[in-house]
Amino acid sequence: MTVALDDETQPIIEELNKNIERQQNQAVKTSQNRSIKAMEKMILSRMASYFIKWRDTLDGITFGVQHNMKARIVDLYHLKLRSAFDTWKKGKLDKEIKMEQGVMMEMEMEEGELQG
Image 1 (cartoon, rainbow, N blue to C red):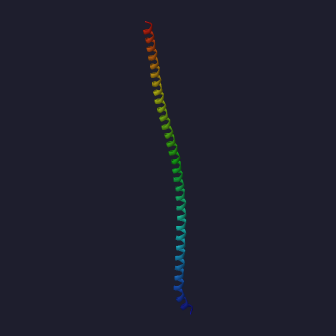
Image 2: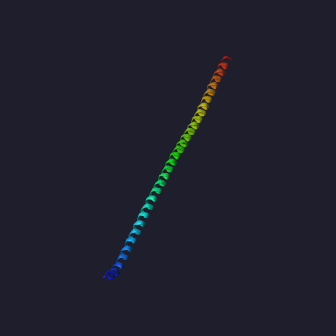
Image 3: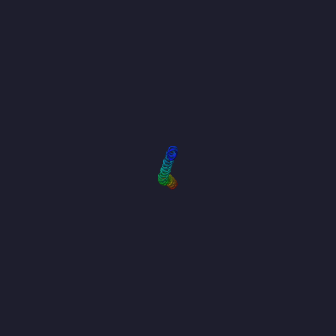
């Protein structure tokens, strides 16, 4: 009777052992996949933080360069305008002085003519 029982239970026990082994393999694969995904997420987050820092640094540098360039351009523009204004003003003053000298010479000539 035990032999007959063993013959009937042996395939069931083997099938159960196969199921247990399959479930264990599946659990191992699932845990491996979970750990791989966790490591992948960690690496990606570190890479993302690196690139975000790199972008922010470049943005800061770009802003500084653009700001300095704009300031230099504005300063040069102001210098050019100031130089042009000074040149114009000097030319205007020179003309006024020449005109006054011309008027003075005319007045002297008229006085000389009147006296002479």
